Image (cartoon, rainbow, N blue to C red; front, top):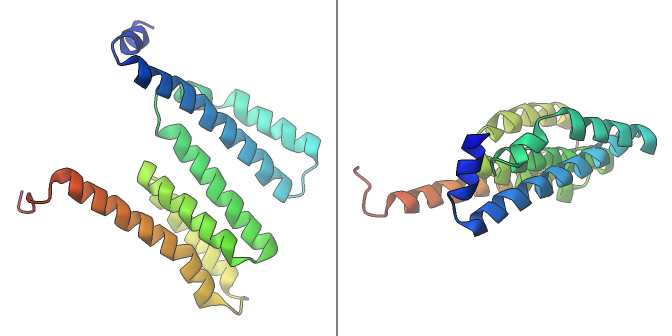
Length: 168
């Protein structure tokens, strides 16, 4: 592909290394987290490995891992957030909700499409909370990290636009 060759030869070699190293790294991490998610559903190791290989070999993750640093980290953070949510479901530990909220919040900073996942997971979370005694604590543990990451994202965008360009 001539476009890819031009892109690769036309930019800083350090940036090329970053693009070509971190994409496959995040892809491998995503597949590893997917394996852990399969194990939380009590699949056998053999079944979990087959599902992980299917994810690795039949999705465009590897293709995206070579061209962009937003899609693959998004998938990794999505899977990691769901993994911590699944651990919360099994162990009912608030620390897992905090990690879930942090992963999803950071994923929102990477790609704003994470908001759809946050909304759907929030609905599922509230549905599961109906039988819990610590509703407010769990909701706060889930939402506060996301609110903090959203605030950080807005602050960084505000600084990027310039502190004095409020009226522009």
